[in-house]
Length: 421
Image (tube, rainbow, N blue to C red; front, side, top):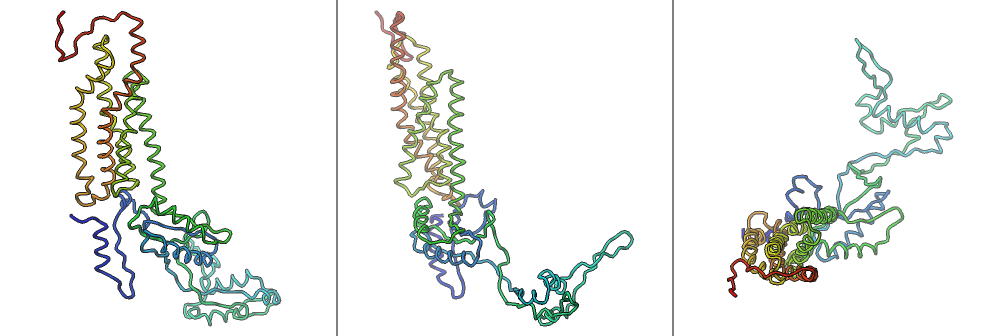
C-alpha cells in the first residue's frame, strides 16, 4: 500500500461528502491491536467527560464543551454522546390534597403499582412448589391511563378517591441507560485528532475548558485515548526504570564490579540523543508505541558498550603492564567492525517497519523509528564516549597502582610485531 491511513481517510471523507439526514464519519484506526482485541469503548480519540448530579445542568455544560472543542485546532468530528431515550409518564402527587384526605404517599404509590405492575398477594403451594399470586388489573383495563386513573384509593374514613384526583401525569422522555462514575452521572463529548498529537492538544484544550463556568458539584475531565495513554506511560516508566536496575544488577554480578556496569549503562542516555532527533525531524510523537521503542532501545543499545568494555577488561587482564590508554585504543579499533555489523543488521531489519510498509505498518512505525535512530546515534557516540568515560574513570586508579609496584617490560599486543633489543 502506497498511501497512509490518514491520506486514505481524507480521500474517503472528501469522496463521500455530506449526506442529507445522516452523519458520516470516516475514522482512521490508530489503536494498537491489543486495544482492539480488548474492545475498548467506542468513541473518538479524545473524550471529555462532564460529571454531575443533574443531567439537565450537565447537558448545558456539554453544549459549551462542544463549542470549545470545535474551536480547538486539531480536533475534528466533535460530537456529544447521544443516549437512547424512551417515553415515560411522570406521576406527580398532590401532597396537599392527599394530606387533607389523610391519604399517605405510600398508599397512593402502592395502589398505582398494584394497578399497573401488580402486587404479590400470597403464595399458592402445590406438591411442595410455590407459585406467587399477583393481583393487578386486566390488560385491557390498564392499557389506557384514563382507565388507570379511575382506580380508587381508600381513605382512613373508608371513602374511595379516584387516582385522577390525587395524581397528575406528564409525558416525558428518559434515557435508557444512565452511566455513573464515582457515584456521579456522566455525559461525554467525543472528538477525533487530526494534524496534531494528543500531547499538544490536551494542555490547550484543558486551558480553554477552564474558562467555562460550572456549578458546584460538577466537573470536566479529559479521558479517552489520553487517559489510556497516561496510564500506559506510568506503567512504561516503571518498566523502564526496572529494566535499567535489572541490567545493572546482572552486569554487576557478572563483572564483579560496580563501575563497569556504569560505563555500559551510559550508552542509554547516548541513545536518547537519536530518539530526540527522530521526534524533532520526523512526524513522530511520544506515544505508547514510541515509548515501548524506548524501553526496547534501552536493552539493545547497551550491547555495543558491553562488547567494548568487556574486551578492554580482557586486554587489561592479559597485558597488565600495558598503559590503559593504549589498551582502550586497541579495544576500540578491534571491536569497531563487530559492533558496526551488529548494529547494521538490527537497523536494516527494522527499516521496513520504520517506513510503515505493509498493512498496519503505521501503527508500529514509531517504535521502529525510535529503535533505529537510537541505535545509530548510540553506536556512533558510544565508540567515542565510552572509551573516553572509561579512560577518565580508570586511568588515575591504574597510575596509582603502577606507582606501587615494579613495572615489567610490556608484552606485545596481539598482532603487534615483537621488537628485538
